[in-house]
Structures are given as structure tokens and as C-alpha cells.
Length: 325
Image (cartoon, rainbow, N blue to C red; front, side):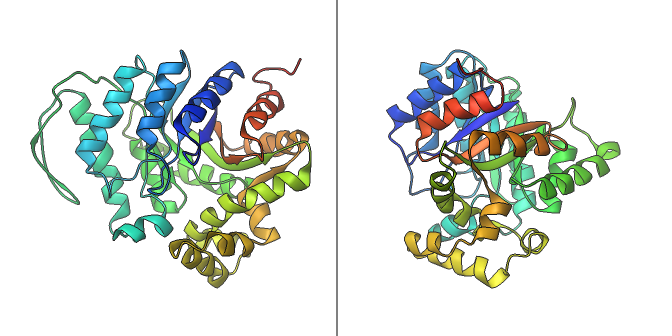
């Protein structure tokens, strides 16, 4: 699978245009990211569903803190109905720097994510559910049919990655560097004998990418998403790339305070190299080839490039999804 992530910093109508462009360029799926200060991801996905025919659609990711997991399951099921069964459920604990603005933390993150999609799967199967764990549900059920919906867990650390390999259909692994995907593949392979979910597991590199014909313009556009990725990266990931933990914490503090320009200015060259594929189409194609040594799928995530529509076409050509004319 080759997919793209769209960020609802753009108007919903424009996001739908981008999804149409992605489908025309041969991409298999489109994910919509979520932060409370952007437009609603499910309204954006609904608009995309109405404008596209074949591309898979899903949140990338939705977090089960600010929305009750049963409500989240219903939203994904509604998307599946609107798209004639094209929905994917990307679920994870969410971005620390923004959800803490709403009074949430990542307490029991692994259990919360696991319980969320396990309950969702029971609801989609038509069961009525009683649940008392990291959240509560009493005799909850859906009043409409949902069916099977693939679940992808947003992961970066070892425990979430291994849990996904055991229980989910795939992982949206937050990594753009071969070092990180090689490590993730080791975690997945170690869980092969413990896997309880049916079907093959899909390890997807959920890689921030910024592509343009001008490499410097691409790197400049990459600074905002790299700030968010750096701030949310667990210490072992920072250590793997030699990135100072205090520097990452300073970026997270700036984001939480709404000082975004300051956060973006704190991004360093090693952070850009570790957490984004930034450069020309040839640069991107080379890195993707390296990622595919370990990853089954690749999701091109925000910002895509300084010009999103142009970047979608460049990425389609760079991955041979739709050869340039």
C-alpha cells in the first residue's frame, strides 16, 4: 500500500480535492490527521468519501481520549457506510503536545488503544457491549450494520508496536528513517508466534515527507511537522538519532503554549534528517526504496510539500503509482 496523509489545516473542500488528486495518481489510501485546533477529521473524510470511488479512507490517527471509544467506533462505522466499505480505522494515543491542552495525558495509553479497537470490533460485529476498563460502556451497541473494518495502530515505541503486531491488522509506524523501520520490523517479527489477529500484518512507515523540485523549499516546509514528531518521540527514539531530549522537550513546551513559530525555529538539521524525507522526487524515491526493505507499506504524511497538490503528483510519479507523462 502507498498512501498519503492530509492535514485538516486546509478547508474541507480543498482536502476533498486533494483526495481526488491522490486517487487519480494511483494511491491506495488517504488518511486524515487529527489535532483539536484543525478542522474535524471525520467531516473531512466524509467529504472525501463523496468525491472518490476506490481509495481507502480513514483517520490517521484518531485518539480515544477526547472522544469516547464507543462514539469513535460509530464514527468509523459511519464512514464505512458512506464510502461503501472503504474505511480504515487508524487509532493511537494521540499527540502529547496538543491533547494535554484539553486536560488529557497518555495514562494507560496501550490499554486504552487496545480496549478501544477491541470494543469497536465487537460493536461492528453487532454485539451489545459491557466494558469496564480504561473507559466504561454499559449495554452499548450500534443500531446499524458495520461489518469488518481494518484496524491500524499508530505506534512508535516498543510496547505499542508489539501490541499492534499481536492484535491489529497493521501499524502506522511513526518513522521516516530506515533505522527506525528496521527496529520496528524486529519488534513485529518477534511477535509473529504470538499473533492472535487473522491475516497478514501490515507494517506501514508513516513517514513525514516534503517533496519539491527545489530541495531547500522542501526542507523549509518540513520544519512544522518535524517539530510535532520530535516533541512526541519517546526517549529511545531520540537517543537512536542522537537528538537531545531537552531540546525535544523545549519544542513540545512551545507547541503546548501555542508558540508555533518558536517551535519550528528550534528544529535542527539532525531532526529533519531523522524525522522527515525532505528533498527532490529523486531524494524521496531513494529513501522510499530504503524504507521498503523493512516496511510493507508507506504512508506519505504531512506536509507532503510546499505545494500539496503538486507534491501529490510528484509522489505518485516517484513511487511509480502513476508514471509522469
